[in-house]
Length: 400
Ligand SMILES: Cc1ncc(COP(=O)(O)O)c(C=O)c1O
Image (tube, rainbow, N blue to C red; front, side, top):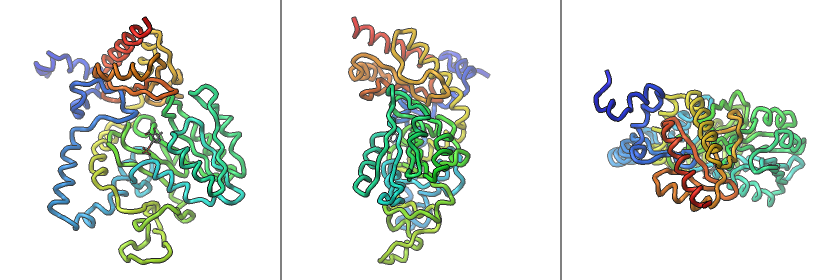
């Protein structure tokens, strides 16, 4: 039965056409904001408030006992919720503060001083990763960055050509933050493994919006965080490591939580835990994991295949409307080569973005890229139309 108030607002009709819109009520900010920025900071799920209260209550009432009642194992139990989104088996994902730390842990597993000293990376990778790689030059690493010819894509052959017998690690940002370009991870991994190199995929801009199965893809490592499509807030980065690598790898960037017997507090050389715990370091970021879980649960419930289906349709709609309005698109037109964001090249991008935010439409701007916009599963088609119509009105006034 249709409730009278729903009939009044027309929401029932909209929800019938797009069943994912029932999730809107789980995100308080959607009541008054057009939220087109989940590639940057996803909206807070309503349940995070009670999750944070649970954290404070646990601390207040259980005190130090909380460590053995769940807190100590949280980097792995919380990682399991991510695992089911990215196709990782139980116990193969650990939580850290952010991607930069996870990337540093991975690169610290290798000796950069030998003959196999190349790190091949894509020229659209996130700058933080580049900064870490260039730091490895002090240890003898050679950094090969495969350039983008158009600021938007990188031809697969160029990446494959750069990978050779001297390559230790190939780092690919699965979906480029600058253009939303979706790399062919399977092809890169196949080539890297043929020459004995490892693959590190940064899946921050794909997990939760583009289906990914780290086991099927056979990547060695994957890093990501929770701020964006996973709707988990800051401080909850994660690292996936392929199971059979535990026996081979000893990260130099480490700490007592990675020890086989951390509570023996043994000084001296490190004795690594035999399993995923060996990729931990110090005390875990417990409150961030409390805040992050509600978002993962929602994404798990809906399923990334369903989210992707809608995302492809709405990003296509965004692109068509932008083109109709005479706005230049800086993301791939083919939905199979595109992640969940669309980048639009407008004049005075910074000022235009500020005006969009003033109009309660949240988007962001990246120099050298443009205005980035992203619908997610809770976005209505009306909001997509509204976003482009407001953007066009700003752009055309600016041009006038
Ligand atoms: C693809 C990608 N990797 C890494 C980062 C940065 O991650 P962190 O701040 O967790 O180190 C971002 C954006 O913030 C990103 O888009």
